[in-house]
Image (cartoon, rainbow, N blue to C red):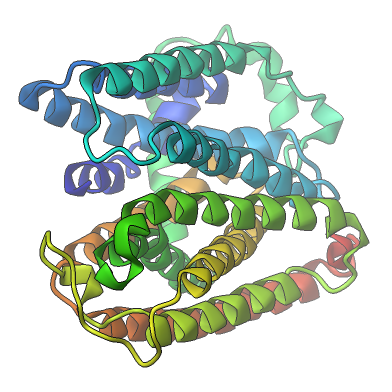
Amino acid sequence: MAIIYGVFSASNLITPSVVAVVGPQLSMFASGLFYSMYIAVFIQPFTWSFYTASVFIGIAAAVLWTAQGNCLTINSDEHTIGRNSGIFWALLQSSLFFGNLYIYFAWQGKTQISEGDRRTVFIALTVISLVGTVLFFLIRKPDSENILGEDESSDDQDVEVNEPAQNNMTKAVDAFKKSLKLCVTKEMLLLSITTAYTGLELTFFSGVYGTCIGAVNTFGTEEKSLIGLSGIFIGIGEILGGSLFGLLSKNNRFGRNPVVLLGILVHFVAFYLIFLNMPADAPIAPLEGTDSSAYIKPSKEVAIFCSLLLGLGDSCFNTQLLSILGFLYSEDSAPAFAVFKFVQSICAAVAFFYSNYLLLHWQLLLMVIFGFFGTVSFFTVEWEAAAVVARGSDYRSI
């Protein structure tokens, strides 16, 4: 994970240039092939192949996320960017639900994962990944009049194919310069606080919380299977949030702030319940687990309910960040999404590092602090953006 997120962070500096030269569709296809390769490594893992593939998927992930953000933006207009962000997020997170659901039932009661079980899962996942990668070629080319903020770029599309090869270098350099300029704009600096919070809580719900559940000996023999069940309910929360905010975006007259406010309140409730329900040493417990007690007797039901809340809150933040980035930076969407993933992945990597050393309540406190200031900074950007464009478009309906 350290290799993947470290390479991911660094690669985001060059991904706008890659997308600018080869285009979002081909970028997503090439990245998908590396994703498939990474999954295939688990069919028969070797140390050298495992770590080498981790480097490649770090690069591929950066390209894929930047190209995806660009593709989402050019296939949306100012009225559909919120809806499309929600639909995308629900589809993306459905893997959490279906993947964990299969593992929960197929591996239930098993203490050792056999070679046959492992190969069955990863061969199936490799095939699914390859099919999904090929389907990138079926993404439609948007009509020029429907492209969000791309009025001028449509005039250049016909001559793009005939541009001399040296112009590719100019495109790459321009995209890199735009990324650096975006990093220091007021809006991006404010949104970076919100993005940093999503990186911290991403690490918490995807790595730390499952470890905590599995380390609580009070849960008895079900503690390991509860990890899979936790993943299922995180996925349900993500899908529920993405679907709900995608469907309601056109009828929302109050902009994005209420959704983000809901997200932080849901997360604060989850953090408080986790603080009461989980032993403080759960993230750093030894392999044997921990017998320490929390403020209340650890409850499986509360633990799983918190998983649902973590997923729902995460979808609130990510759908609205995707939406506001696609709206504010419609003409520079690739650099904007690269900066977004750069900040998020760095913070996720930092969180993976400190999660091995800090007790649970300190990790929760860090997320509360970043969550509060991230929410305030998002509100500031949303209010300023609404004031600027209110005269030109019905911003609040997005």
